[in-house]
Amino acid sequence: MLDIAIVKRLGALQLDICFASNLGVTALFGRSGAGKTSTVQIVAGLLRPDYGRIALGDRVLFDSRQKVDLSAPERRVGVVFQEGRLFPHMSVRRNLLYAHAARQNPEFERIVDLLGLGDLIQRKPSTLSGGEQQRVAIGRALLSAPDILLMDEPLASLDAARKAEILPYVERLRDEAGLPILYVSHQIEEVARLADTVVLLSDGKVLATGTVDEVFSRPDLMPMTGRFQAGSVLTAAVTCHDADRKMSRLVFPGGALIVPSIPLPEGRQVRVRIRARDVSLALDRPKDISIRNILAGTVESLTDTEDPFRTVIVKVSDEAGENRIAATVTASAVADLDLIPGKSVFALIKSVAMDRRSMALPPRDDIVA
Amino acid sequence: MLSDAETDALLLSLSVAFWSLVVTLPLAVALAWVLARREFPGKMLVNSFLTLPLVLPPVVTGFVLLILLGKQGWIGVWLDRWFGIEIAFRWTGAVVAASVMAFPLIVRPIRLSFEAVDPRLEQAAATLGARHWRRFLTVSLPLAQPGIIAGAVLGFAKALGEFGATITLVSNIPGETQTLSLAVYSLLQVPGQENAVLRLTVIAIGISVLAVVIAEILAQRTRRRIRPDQANDA
Image (tube, rainbow over all chains, first blue to last red; front, side):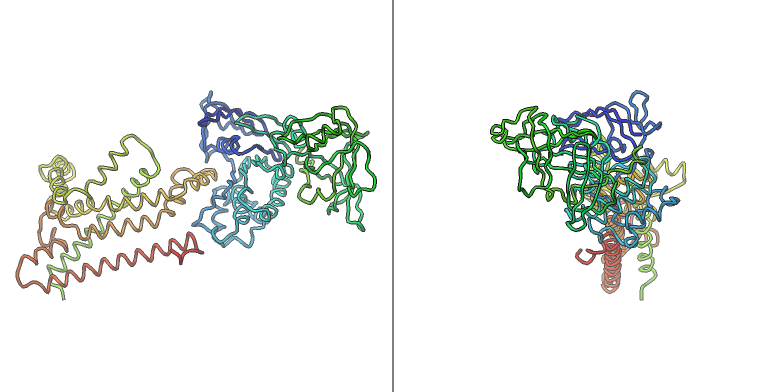
C-alpha cells in the first residue's frame, strides 16, 4: 500500500528511506534521532524530500522525477502526533468533525464508540487527560477518512498507566479499522505488541525490514535494541488453562511455555516477548527449581552486547519447527560455561517474567492476509 | 448639555476612529500574519517602515501625508483625477491620518498573537485536509483573537485622540475635520471655555475607559473558550 523511497538531507543526518508497508501495522522502530519523525512528516507532506518517490496504492503523493508533490491537505494521510495537537478553542466534537470528510462520515458513531469518546464529546481539550486527548486525536485522524494512518509515538508523552489505557484501543483499531497504519515508536514493547512488520531505522537508514519475530530475533540487530530492550518474540498458541493454579500453557514451534493465566480461548494465537535479560542458561537440566520453563536447545551465536554482557542466541526446535531465544548473560558466565556455537544448553525462563504486558494478540489473520 | 459644535466634534471623532479601524484592521491582520509566518527579503525594511509613524513627530508624518495626498500631491493628483477623491482638508483625510498613526499600534499585538499560535496546530489542520484559507480562518485567526482585540482597542483609542498628523493634513475645520482633540485645542485658545474643555475631557475619558472594559470582557471570553479550566488565572 505505502511505497516510499526518498532521500533528504537534514543537517548532519542524511535520511535515506526505502520500504513498503501493507495493510496492518508497520512499525517504524529506532532510537531517537534515527529519522522516524522526519519520515512521518515526509509521508504526510509536511516536509519535502530532496528527491525520491512516495506512493499510496496507485496514488502518487510525491515523485521528484515526474514533478509530483501533493500538498498535505491533498494527500489523505491521517496523522496522530505525539502531542495530540487538538485545537484548543474547539470542543471535542468540533475537533472530531474538523475534516470535511468527517461530516459525512457514516462511521462517526462507530469510531466514537471504538475509541470510547461518547462521554467526552462536549468537553474542551484542556479538560481532558493526556490519554483522553490522544484518543480524540486518533478519532479525529480516523474520521478524516485517510488512506493510511501515521502514528508518531502516540504514547510517548503518556505515563505507564495511560499507555496501558490506550494500547487496547490501538489494537482494536488495527483489527477493525481496515487501513494501513504506520506506527512510530522507540519502545520495543509497543512494537512487539502491535506490529505486523517492523522497519528498523538507524542514522536515517533502513537497517532491516521483516516480521516482528524475524527482526527482533536477529542477533546482529540486537545492539540496536540495547541490553535491556533486547529479547525475542514468539508467536504461540494457547493450548490449555490450569484454572486451579491460574496458569496457561502456550505452544510454539520449538517448545512450550507455562505463563500466568491469560483470558483467551484455547487455540488463540498470542505473541510473547521474552526479554533477553530474563533468560538464564544452564548446561544440565536443573532439578528442584522454581523456574517453570526449561527449554532444551543449542547455542547458535553470540553477540557482543555492552560490556560486560553477552547475548547468546539459543535455537530451540521440535517437529513443529524452530525458534530462537535470546539470553543476556555476563561475559564471565560465557567463559565459565564455555558457551560456544553448537553447545547444548537449557534456557531457563521464569513464568513471572512474562506478565500481561509482554503478551499481546497478534493481528488477526484475515487482516494480515 | 453639549453645544452643537461639541456634539459634531464628538460624532466626528467616533466616526473617524470607526472608519479608520474598518480600513486598517483587515490590512493589519494580513500584514501581521505575513510578518509572523513568512520570511521574505526586505522583511526588516517593512518592519522599520511600519514603526516610522511611532517614532516620527506626528506633525512630520502629517506633512509627508500632505505632500503625498494633497490636491497637488503625487498620489493626491491621481486620486482626484481618477476617483474624484479629495483627502486634504476633508474628514476622509482625518481618517487617513488617524489610520496611518494607529496602524503600527494595531499590527504589533496581532503579530505577537499570531507568533504565539503553535504552527504545529496549522500542520495538524493541513493533514486533516484544510487548505490555506480554511487553516487561517479556523485555527490561526480564532487563536489570535485576543491580540486582534487588543490591537483594535489600541488602534481605536489612538485614532480617537490623534492630533498632530490630523491638524497638519486636514487642518481644524469645525464640522468637517474638527475632532474631539482638535476641539479641545481650539477651546483652550479662547479664555473662559474651561467648562466646555472639562466636558469634552470627561467624554474622552469615558469613551476610552469603555473601550478598554469591552476589550477586557471580550479577551476574558476568548480565554475561557480556549482554556476553560484556567480562564480565571489569567
